[in-house]
Length: 175
Image (cartoon, rainbow, N blue to C red; front, side, top):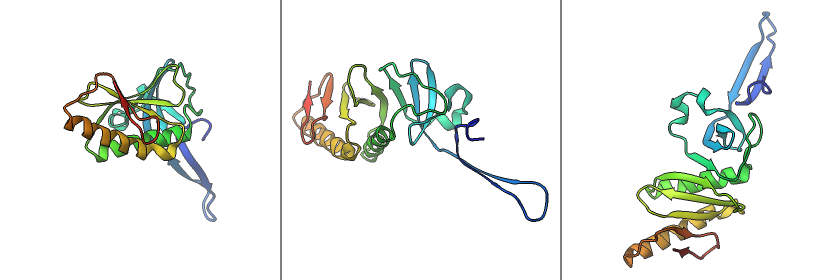
């Protein structure tokens, strides 16, 4: 069943002592992202595995999920690992930390030609934020660096036109 339905996290079959019908216990993976890749749009779980094609999933499931756009040319296969679990954890931490600061993410992008980079677009901001996904432990620190930098720039009446780069820990660059 798990090979046929990759959205299942766990399948257990119990044979009752009395009776003739087995009891199936199914546990589905929770969806975490919608990934737009070159070969389709897929729903990913928290480990980065492609669960199901987006067009076959209910909109009630995919409607509130962050959309991750892949520009690297990644070919996704159902039931296989699309992105690493460390990268998935990093992205989820960034989205949650920004949401805790009332900043809504409008776009998540894995840009072409940039290994381990995540570009995040915030609603109402004309620039993107460049994150380094190499170390999933540093996600909160990078978001904190961005928030401190954004507050400093607002105080100086400066609005970056292209990006705020927080890929170097403890440093921020903007253009």
